[in-house]
Image (cartoon, rainbow, N blue to C red; front, side, top):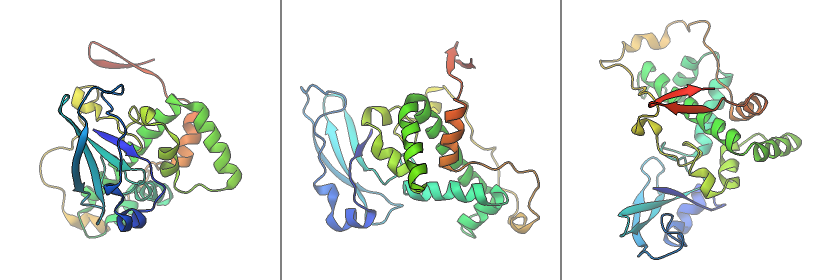
Length: 243
């Protein structure tokens, strides 16, 4: 289980000061009134962010571990919140999602794989923003007003992570919050791509398809969902129903 570690440090300062050693979890998230034997459980590396280690705690009674994730790290996705935000903004400004994916991943992977990589991040940010607006429209409105007055639209996800309480973040999907993937509980359809090899990499430099719908940057997503709140979803017989 992931819980936020409140820190204003940058990645470099976090690594230089080895802040995971001094990280504290004052109470067990599953036993807020005490009564359990919560104890420190070492730390582990964040492979996609060199030098970063995550402090971990363990509750023997519930047999659960708790990872103290620094505010600058994305939840359930590799990398930083700022790098995910930059990828979404690039997809918004590029002529197509294929062009943005090619620029971000280059020759590391094939173009179809790069597009899937980028779409996963776009969809995750969209779901995070939708949940944040639905749960706290007043906070999001104040955030929008402040950002507009300062003309500072950078590091939006990072600032939202710092503004939301841990209890709220636990109900917001990743990468902003720490909500588990609802597909594991059968609440959302599985979006796994079809089996089989990717098409040939020769398509990487083919002509860009026309009519590709652009995504939105996080700031525009907030504006969109504040003016048009997402419909509430109810579940009946295990199937989602929008009303």
